[in-house]
Length: 450
Ligand SMILES: *[C@@H]1O[C@H](CO)[C@@H](O)[C@H](O)[C@H]1NC(C)=O
Ligand SMILES: *[C@@H]1O[C@H](CO)[C@@H](O)[C@H](O)[C@H]1NC(C)=O
Ligand SMILES: *[C@@H]1O[C@H](CO)[C@@H](O)[C@H](O)[C@H]1NC(C)=O
Image (tube, rainbow, N blue to C red; front, side, top):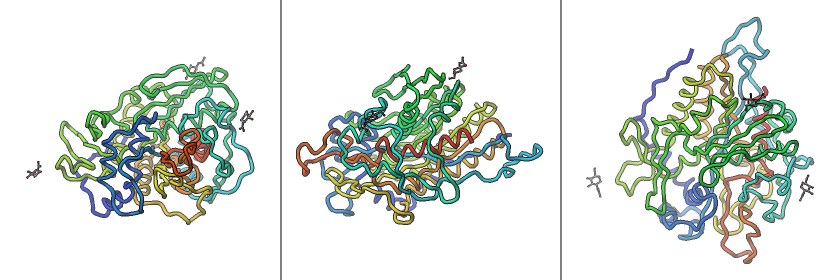
């Protein structure tokens, strides 16, 4: 009942077009990305990052990536809609992958004005990471709080804390991935906290990369697991001169994989870390390297590595847990929105969403999204109508239309205390809370309860 796929790991060469697109995408944001992704607590930026930024500078937009500002930027997002294997839709016990009508497709649509206030704010929720607490940090405009996503062909119901908590009663849901997984997990905690108080019952790891909360009223548990590449990685250490992640394609990250048996639902969210320099290992050999000129190695596209890792991970989940009733949702890539100088006011200055069609998806975002959509669909199809369900939270397009939803300079408190010309770090990758990322969890609610 589980289809085994054969993987190849030797097709990771990098077509020119991809490289150019990647280089373009990566120019500035990448240096920032490193910082935000790796040093969420904002330490002085290591010199190595500066070097990288300088090395990749291409004359795209003037003023990018000065050789020593602080950098920071973060990571990625999710997929779409799950299918309900057994509930209702099919007739007379006829179960086939095509028997159910297609679920609502939330991925295409537009942002429309919404007068309702968010369910929480910068002071009412205790689990907003400092860097995403735009309100508390003095972001003056509030228009970005008043939009709702209207899918093209159906309706996305507003988030219902009661409905979510009802589903979560006696259950355990985990977010697994990079800092965007954390961002989404913290958004969910705030949404639920508008109805019931979460107690932090566990925290571990540098910067609390592993945490767990319980809503005691509901015996409902939410966890966040740090696993920015899903598989095992020896994270780079800039200060020690190690600029690359060493990524092991054939070693699952047991810190979360081994816990999955006790989880009822998991949201996977990774992507941005694949853009940073990496050395890829498989079967005891180096099979590829991304951003490796200094190592005298041929460049490898990270797209193929990403696909391979997503595929192997979902196949392993199916192998181990194929007979368990659980939902595995995968959030698709969440685009960043750098436009101005990344270390000054105006790095992501927009105050409103883009209109439908106003902003095309970049090549990298498109590829990263497509991989998740395709691989999750394949996993869902091999799981068939069994108890293990796979779903995509396809947020790439809706996120792409929200240049106004990032903290920008308000990742720090009162960023312009030193004047509007001051150098400030900008986060145009993560999402303000409250903000557009709350919509990811509206989709999650429909997915798990659908
Ligand atoms: C935040 O929410 C709390 C609780 O709902 C409310 O008392 C407070 O006035 C709100 N603060 C702001 C700045 O809106
Ligand atoms: C509480 O929830 C956990 C799942 O997180 C479950 O294993 C346990 O059985 C629940 N307790 C009760 C009393 O139902
Ligand atoms: C880089 O690799 C090429 C081909 O393997 C080799 O000829 C060359 O000497 C290497 N350069 C350095 C600096 O190691």
